[in-house]
Length: 101
Image (cartoon, rainbow, N blue to C red):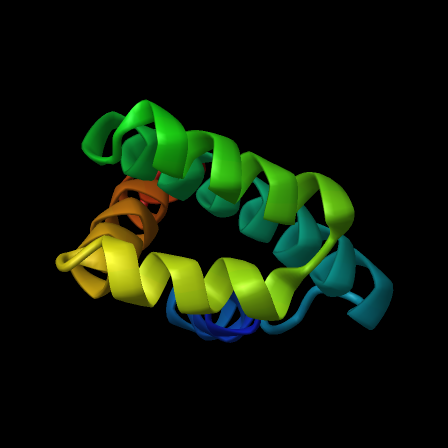
């Protein structure tokens, strides 16, 4: 999930016309955007899974087992790719409003 979100956030920087930012600023912005989107994705996922599954997912997250997180999400959340895209779209809309585009 993280890799996908990071790639999409980099693409979003380009789509928003922010390519001229210095590399360090772009990297920082991508990192912040990825963190926001990832957090929102996890919150949405938590709304769709049961308590036992939530505990399992939290265990993977706390242990930093991102491969397990990805496998879990793809297996247990049938609309996972839609959740990712929705949260990315929401972030892009928020950013467009803030930059006045």
